[in-house]
Amino acid sequence: MSYLKNIFHTVRRESPILHGIVMIHFVFAIVSILGLFVDDRMLMGVNVWVKPLKFCVSGGIYIMTVGYLTTLYPYSNRKRNIINNLTSWTLLFEIGIIVYQGARGVPSHYNQSSLFDGLLFAAMGILVAVNVLIMAFLAFDTIRLKMKVQRPVQIAILMGWVIMLAGSWVGGQMIGQMAHNVGVPDGGAGLPLVNWSTVAGDLRVAHFFGLHGIQIIPLFAVTLSKRWDTHTRNLLVAVVIFGLVYASWIGFTFYQAKQGMPFIKL
Image (cartoon, rainbow, N blue to C red; front, side, top):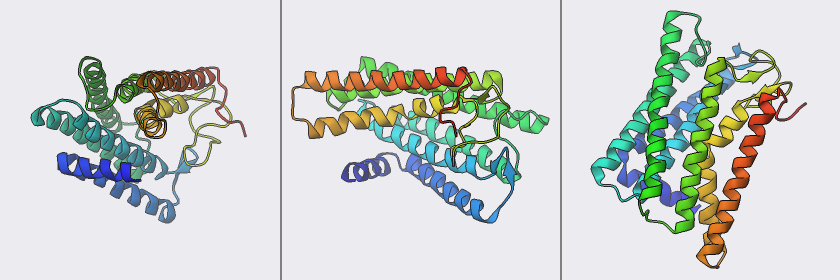
């Protein structure tokens, strides 16, 4: 908990605007939770506020992650602020569209039912594309720069960015087919909250694990370095093995989905 408190304190001190946008995400998340209780409208088998809630939480965590990680690179204040502002503002606009469409009771993704809905979906694509470019830039800088962390943690951050780019590619696959399910139309029986299909393939599984690799792998490296008093080489080997296993897991869930098999069959 102390480590997480340090992350929040660092981001609030170094990037107050980004921190404020994270708080807006969490306010939207609370609004979405309230919506689950007072609004009984359904969309593709789930409450209209489920998707805004998921994206508010996930987006807030990611923006906070970027805000903290940029303090670990040897960046000038100006360069760090440019990255943080691009990331936080573009994702704020994206979540605004998702919450707005959820409030309207219509899909935010793959929605071409009207010119207006199509333009909103296209705008979301542009905003996401900006963030994918930022991910690639940060991955490149993780290779060429010496960060303010131990070598195993820097390797973990690099693997996290690479895996997140792979997760974004899976998102591109969903856009290509204008759906997230494989074998059946979107909607229908799904797991609680995440709504991953329990009857057919669902690309959102690999997409989810890919996008959160940038938190999971570095957190593993930091935790391991604090708990295991050993040579740096051993930590490095353990981190690389964990990262490769995690990447293999994402590869498996992607293959599973493409074969039309559900992540968990109920």
